[in-house]
Image (tube, rainbow, N blue to C red; front, side, top):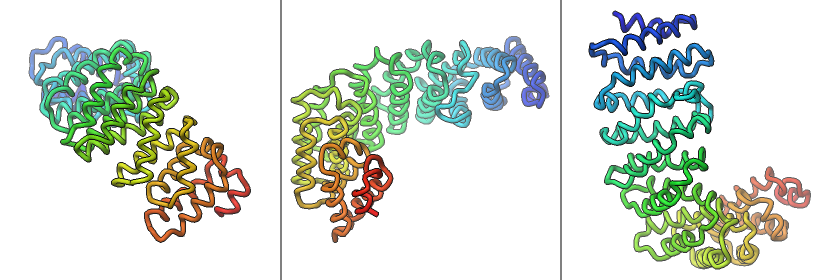
Length: 393
């Protein structure tokens, strides 16, 4: 009866009652010796809801209630509520929107230990949801408010992913590590070497394509923050061309285009030539669709960063026989590097090639060419070129 009464107060339409309900619950947690675990999930959901409110008194009362509540939890009880806690965080605001309670001084302190305990010692589902929950928090907390907790979050994630756990757990961790890199790169910088090794290692993870894809995405974000990436380029090119497993070659190619696209400005001349070579070879002798698409995006990254080799490669596209990979490469260039493509070659020559491919008998070529043509209608500077628009209309 007491729990139901306190929860009712915490949900009351009057703000003073909601704050009072939190204060009473905090006092209860401090003095009780009773087991109220049947109500743990109810309080998790309610306190998260109150963290969204802008009223300062309610935020403070909810934070004090969180602090008192978390101190009553055993490790087993923490693990038991990690899944509903993550579900609650996921539905609290939206990614990129800051939750006022998370942004308070010490606002995260009573919540993070629950998720970290689930990550370190829970079941596989609890580990996965804890990792995702940490990522959700990072996306909903102000950068300055995250600073004191970055090491506390990042260290366990890297430690757990190095161990043998099922693919969903590793995929969740890779996702959250990438969120950390995107959101607070300046605070994660001490972990850059470990993160690079982690991402590269998981490109070769044969158990899951999701793991390989997320590792490639993480590398792309990481390399946008690194001044020297030539050794990694060499490793990715070698893996994409020489690994014995096709799935790994595809993953290496997938990582290559993301690294070139994000960090292309920092690639040295020798590494640029390595990238150009793999593009040339694939244009001449296409392989499987996924691999070809990655190499097409790699060329778009070269065009975007105006690498010296890009102009000759685009000329090869335009002069050679149309293929699915060459048409896909033109589409990716129009989408990812429209201004640079417009500058490095004759706009009308590109337009003519795409329109010619639209009527190609090969459905893969014609479909991709139509996508490129439609992009040219609405993408600057192509959309502002009257001669081009007269052709594609």
